[in-house]
Image (cartoon, rainbow, N blue to C red; front, side, top):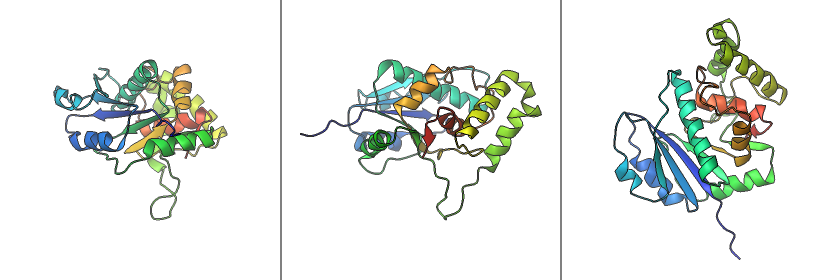
Amino acid sequence: MMRPSPAIAVVIPAGPIDDIDDTIESVLTFIDSPRKIVIINDTDGRDLGEIAARSSDIEIIEPINSHATRGGRLMENIAAAYLHLLSTFEFDVLLRMDADALIVGPGLAEVAAARFAEDQRIGLLGANRIDAGGNPRDWSWASRTLSRSCGAWGLRHPKTRRLLRRLRTDAISHGYEMGEAPQGGGYIHSPALVRAMSDRGLLSPSGLAQCHLGEDQIFGLLAYRMRLRDR
């Protein structure tokens, strides 16, 4: 008897200069149903109706308009998409993709779901501590930014500073390396990690809106905080 395909949710933030046609085509070609594809329309007014018409599995949502930092705004919008998916679609795998990333072959959802099933301590796929050249990845910018945000620099946003300090302390105790993050072009969450972040209020719009880290770096930190490490 053939096993059913894992349900996969795909989140793609689309900005003003992004051409997402090829990205969407790669998702529709290589990701089987059950699937839900959420596009965050942060394009400053572009009509994405033609893209949405390609499949009933595609949904367009509007961004949150806030005064967050550039990284914080993206984090807010992605977090809002995750919360939307938690309330509307039961998924086994959540893929977050850049608008210029491509899926180049079949089987992504099946491989990811199997990895989460065999090791329930893993909540995030797409991080590598070794780069393509066989050298340790350089986390230095994110590490410095996190340290500064937790120090005197962060006093401009005391709520964010307090939250980051708590997250950093807990994550380090679970094996986190300062600045560690998944590859920004695409990474995969387990439903357990997304639910855990939601249950603890870490996907709320105000939580990390003033953080200067990239959203991929924030998710690397949160994965270790939730004891659902990245691999």
